[in-house]
Length: 161
Image (tube, rainbow, N blue to C red):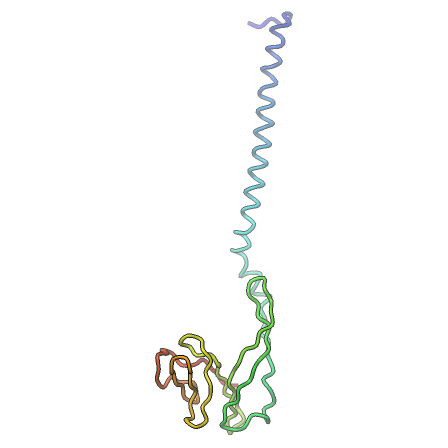
């Protein structure tokens, strides 16, 4: 049994009460540091999971001018270069994309990409053969972009306005 009047025993008693207090303090500090690290690591995960929710409001359709309708001859594809703003992650940069536009007799417009679906080479309109040719691997497409022959397995992408 400890005697409170003995100074040596009193020092032992003080050390016993200080040790748990120090341990409790170090445990609390360690817990706060671990919680901070956990929160710091959870931020990117939460941003990844919630990105579609917040990004859905920011997406907008942007129309780009491809020229006047009267400047496009009827039945003859014309190559046009569009100046666009491309957003890729945090990067925003201006890019130029080539398309083929053709005016139909009813003043509707057919648009076709100038990129071959095979390996991404450029396709060009050949007036003499009335088809689009990919010079890289000899894929050929008709006026509507349908695959005629070649290694490409898909038609050229396009649409009408």
